[in-house]
Image (cartoon, rainbow, N blue to C red; front, side, top):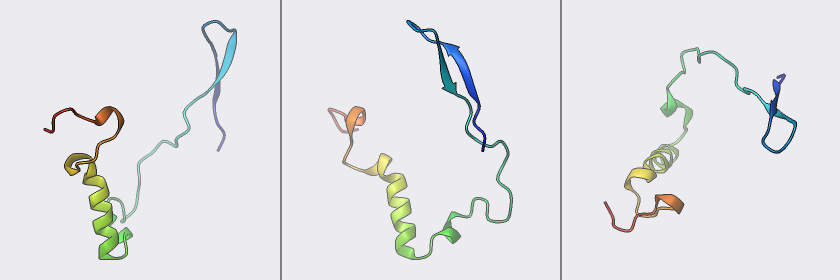
Length: 72
């Protein structure tokens, strides 16, 4: 994949090279689009996937700027 490099003026400097878009345009195609359950083999892998995804909403451990003084 060829990357686009743009030259832009930076504050306090002359021109710098900035990396442009690095994604390929388009939409996913095929029968398996959105079928995450079939991609995970066992029940334990599925539960791990769901627990990790919902950790943000239902977990007691918060990190960094997400930490609250009073629990919601």
